[in-house]
Length: 189
Image 1: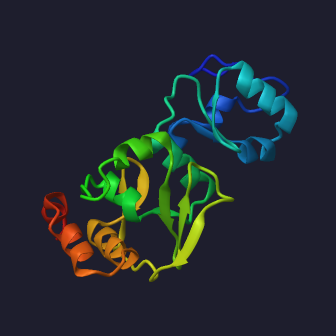
Image 2 (image 1 turned 90 degrees about the vertical axis):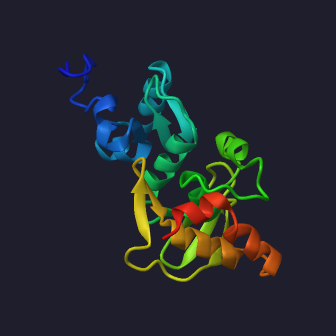
């Protein structure tokens, strides 16, 4: 029995709540548990019987953890550490209001679109599905163009604004609408 949770570890297996501990913000990847000896079928049965919530294939939230956009972002970054939140999702995290996306917060809550950047590409995930995302080339992330908000790796405000400008149709109206946004101006340096 573990002291912190009271959960009984059977057959010498590490309790699931310890695997999803505070360092992982209550998120467990099935590949982590199977790598430590949990049989896959037994693991899935155990997670369901204990009330864990499936975030997406291969990622679970511990009982009592509400699965919202923040948890989804953390789960994807835990599974793919090279990903950095970018573009519209980064704007949302930085609380930059984008005039053309009045429903953005609702869309993020529903998990409809999540934007990520690696060193050379950007991937947009509908929900949390990796297989259906779109990928496009972007300039590599330079030192100092990323930071952390609420435990989530994200592009800086200036990089986010630059990504939004590059991703748009390239018209003056588009550029002005981004740059004139009061929340964008107040957060850029």
